[in-house]
Structure formats: structure tokens, C-alpha cells
Length: 167
Image (tube, rainbow, N blue to C red; front, side, top):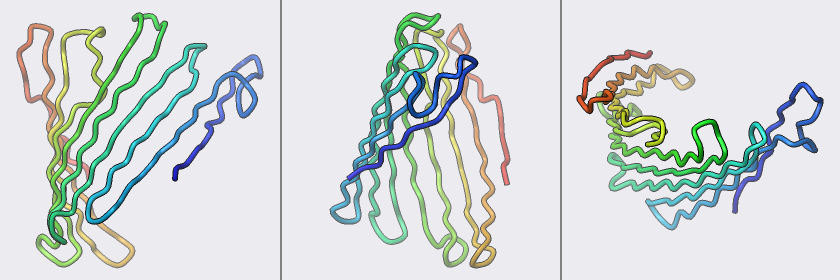
């Protein structure tokens, strides 16, 4: 059904870890009836003496053996911070194509927003990504990734500001 884990942290007072005050729990549930899958996740815990909770949902669909879609949305809350109560959210959508260029290779395109919180300013960031995953051998893959970031300024104008080749 799911997976529950605990993260171990320490702090100067010696509290923390499994029986101390700072911990995190994660539960994930997956349903995969066919070429589609749905995952629901919950995470909760305490950080700097404040509780946080987050929920998320992933959806995957293999339309054909060569074409797949993926989507994700998450939302959380973190109370009593220096910025008051925060409710960050994020989303992402991806299209993947198999056997592009050669057998076993995967090419894809994605768009998404990392954690966004309106109480921390009016700017948002949108990321576009293109990637290619090339199987060099059975044990090695080369994956160049190009990311474009659109960052809104305080005035609301948008600038495509960065191109990041990773590989």
C-alpha cells in the first residue's frame, strides 16, 4: 500500500532523531490498473518547532509503448513562519517519447512551476525542459537536459532568463 519513513535530524540540544522533536513522515499510495497509474502522497512533520503538511498527486499514462504523459500537483501548509502561514504549491506536466534516434533512447519535454507562495511576492517561475536520455551501454546513459526558466519580475513582466545545459 504505501511506504512510511522517518528522517533523522539532530539539533544542538540533543533532541531529534527517532524519539526527538523533529521528524517527518511520508505515506504514498499507488493504483496502477493498466497503462495508467495514479499516486497520492502525504508528508507531515515538524521543522523549527512548526508543523507542516503536504499532499501531492501524480498521474502517468502510457498512451502507446512509445508515448507517455505525466502530471503532478502538490500543495502544502507551513504555519507560524516569519512570513505568517504559507501554502506553497507546485505543478508539472511531461511528454516522453521512446526509441527516438535509437532503441532504448527517451526524449521528452516538460513544463512546471516549482514551489510558489503568493505571500512571498508576486513573482512566479515557470520552467521548460527538454531532455534526451541516450543508452550508451547497458550500464551507462547520457542525459543532456536543457532548462529554460521564465521568472516574473515584481512589475509582472516576464523574462526568459537562463539556459542550463546539464549533462
